[in-house]
Length: 38
Image 1 (cartoon, rainbow, N blue to C red):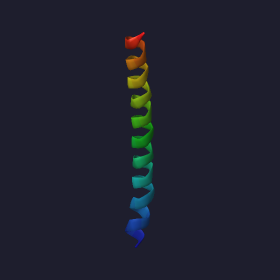
Image 2 (image 1 turned 120 degrees about the vertical axis):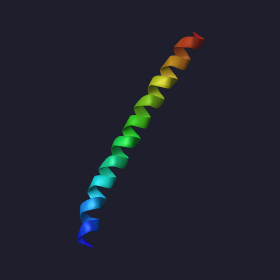
Image 3 (image 1 turned 60 degrees about the vertical axis):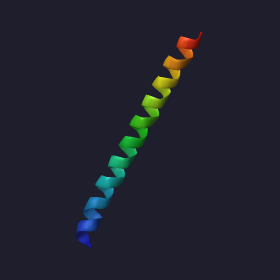
């Protein structure tokens, strides 16, 4: 059970980083799409 406790925060941190990276790339892609339409 201690191994799970060690792995979980790392995994949660990894997921959070992945989420924010995806959000950033999404906003950049949206910005590029909008600027190419105008």
